[in-house]
Length: 496
Length: 130
Image 1: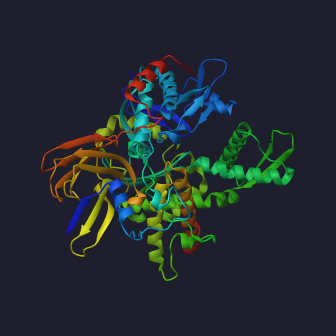
Image 2 (image 1 turned 180 degrees about the horizontal axis):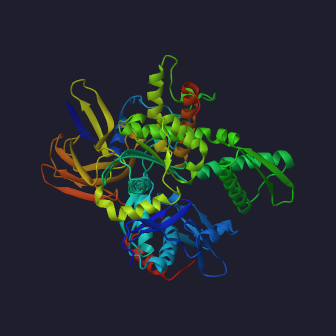
């Protein structure tokens, strides 16, 4: 049985690694002989089989192919409809995980417990959906770990470095930046910041626009008229993007599916860099945000580590080198280090101190007795970057006489302004009648090591209390009972 | 010195509908209508039973004139602002709208994208391109 197993469930690629007896992690290939499996699922019409990986990605039926399901893991209403059957993002992810488990266990032995990586800014629901996906695939999640943390663990292990490390993880779908401190065998995360929908696939879309424009200019026709052809061109743009990381100029020839002729596409690295410049500026702003959150300057960072396929773009290295005045280092294969780090994390988790990825609080009217000013604000109980697991309490007062029901909104977000935070739940607590306003209510938030939050509200006078874990409802969210049923059904499916 | 009085979303909405003039938010004024207007921001009955990212209480002001606003206007920069003030303002806005860009509400996400583009343009103008 493989004891320490890590899985990188990526937006575009997924990988599984295990810890060998010598203490070094190793990627386990799938049955197709690939070290990484494209996170794509194809639902076949003729046979009751789900294809996962390259075969699914390279197949031709976009209506039956699911790409980048990870981008929907936090959407409670998102469903994929195949032949009238509705699949939740969690179920689709479970198919990817099931392929990895089934095929890799033939090489390393039974896989029961795993560490799975998630983007640093994955919210509560997305984390819960990831755990549910693993359970459906027949694996228990020992821990979830943030992707940049896993990469940094691998980098620190592989390079034997000490000091402050900034990890810049630009993957297929997301950007994550984490700053951590390595002292001996101990790792302390200082902060993690993330940007959704900012990754290699956004660059591909920009290149697709360039292809479309050049094709139209040369032939006067549209480059694609359906999703199937658009996907094929998108694959070509991805290949061109990779070439532009090695060459200054790339030529391609494309045709549409209406026999309107062939066009020659000319791309230069300079042109590509101009195309993606504004996206890259956003990534720099995220790095600056991370530095601000950790109260550090660029010169305080000892190592800048690159993770994710999009960090192969030379401009990425250049801008980071300019910002930090030091050459960023890649942690080996940028596509594999997250899975490798997850396997290491499975063994070393006790020595890794993580932090709360978001601030949690409630809405309160904050009254400044000195100035007389009163303002509705997001009152933070657990600030972002608090070491986890943790628990914090704040005492509030009731606002009205004879208040019978206390309602406490649970907010997620750092902004003082309530308009810019998310309300992720509410606790309602009944209290005794005939009390004046100003009664004390203690609100406690606790945060576990899987970055899941619980809230407790206590009426101090009566001692009544109510505790809840944030729960979600929606068509795309499975109940515990549904989860059990789906697990049984998934185990009987043919997944290849 | 600070007294913290609990307010739920529904209470704050009630208070808003009764209050004569709500205080002007200190935040930026995003570009276009997002979701409902201030007078119709009553949350759906089940809104808090689900993940609510970008709830209707985000009553962004609407664009009153037909003239498109410049990136500086969107970011509420004034000509008298120093480089440091512009930098601080852009950082605050970036943090705020990078977060909104993850909203499940496509309208809020679209507005966040517009704001992020404006923030980048202003940054490039005042601090140079990468």
